[in-house]
Length: 243
Image 1 (tube, one colour):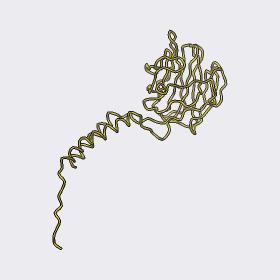
Image 2 (cartoon, one colour; image 1 turned 180 degrees about the vertical axis):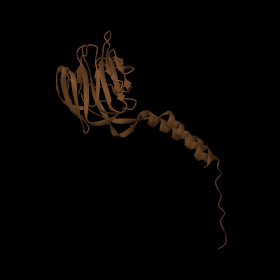
Image 3 (spheres, one colour; image 1 turned 120 degrees about the vertical axis):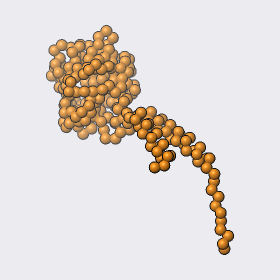
Image 4 (tube, one colour; image 1 turned 30 degrees about the vertical axis):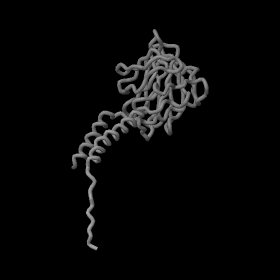
């Protein structure tokens, strides 16, 4: 193997290790189509891509379906996308909750098992009145993004063990594993907050930082090899005069 090829492979390998999370998934967010309000037995149905989604638990009357006016913006995009999630929810759909004692367990069910589903959480808790999503130990997750919402500002949701906390918190989480359902409780009461869910699509898209990194790689390689090319003398071809 030539020295130039070896240098290139080592350099690109280092870049890939440093930027292992550069590829983000396109998320098919749930298009919620109907809901019935209820404190413990509310319902909602919809679909994420070709997968049917149903929900049983607390549902407030100000939930929003069918992308109608009155829902939330899921903006700015930097709050509701990031990490391994390339796109925020495109719909104004949201299932809203208040939480509190006696509200029981909330459950999302998928018509077929899904891998590494995601959840966007909006306006969780408030200043002086924090709230939380308490998942089970068999539902590991990581926070992918967070920040203020356009509607009420705030900051990123936070994680402590299997609990998502917020005091006007917003952001996204991603579960690790294959799931037919996701369950949780909301033990603290707060005026209202909400969520939606999604599933990764099939086509990964590079984050903007990846394009910048790729351009830097090309530039550095050009600087390295370009100088060498310029230093090489042009070969002179001696023509034969045997004619």
